[in-house]
Amino acid sequence: ITPEAKAYLYQNLHAQLENAMWAALHHQPQVYQVSITRMSSWIKRYFAADAPETMTLLQQLDELAKAM
Image (cartoon, rainbow, N blue to C red; front, side, top):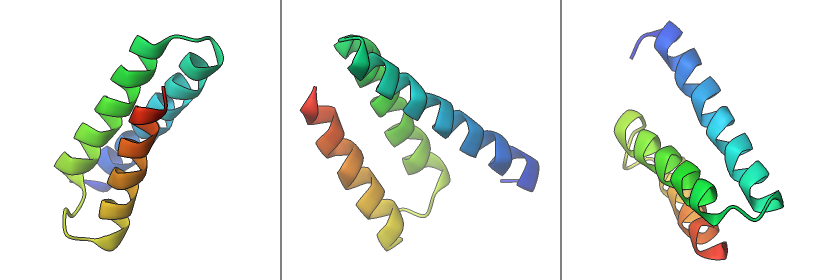
């Protein structure tokens, strides 16, 4: 992944996190779940799967998905 693409990936992940927060505040569970699922999918695709940070983040996203 190029540095420019990496910057866009981080921006898109941030946007999905903001969508999830908005959805939680506005009681929109479908929007929340889609945002969490997208983040997980992108992380699995673009980050090192065996990195401890990646595994921790994916675990936290799984926990968040169960929260709403």
